[in-house]
Image 1 (spheres, one colour):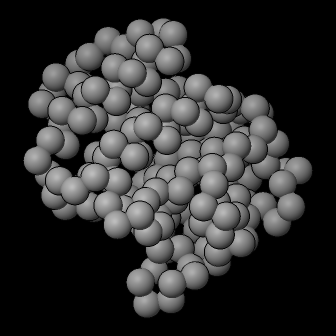
Image 2 (image 1 turned 90 degrees about the vertical axis):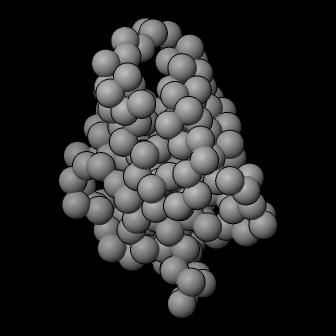
Image 3 (image 1 turned 45 degrees about the vertical axis):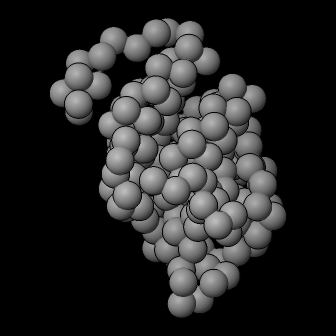
Length: 167
């Protein structure tokens, strides 16, 4: 299945590209119960499908601390190891349980610069089958205002389909 995706020619139009990638993610992950494998696959498939994705990955709720995120599967330069709820874009998404779409990370109060080349960011909360926050999905771009409502809507759909339902 991975070979098929790796050779897939994706449409240029963003919403259609997300639609095709979402279908491929669902097909690749069908029947796979391991959360780490699911996170790694989502990260890889999305990071390799959009050229404006600069850093892509998950920060997982630390079960021992409850109000702190720890880096999970990702692709890109070195990520921050831990982020407290309420701190930076990822911590804000975790604390508020709402998606954060930031056109200019340098204007975001308390932004954490894991890599100074990041210019814009989108972070979506990830909920498990029990409805509890399990992680946030973070995508940085080295382009200003790289993300829009299409990214927001499709990431929410993909994450809900991948993690909110029992496998």
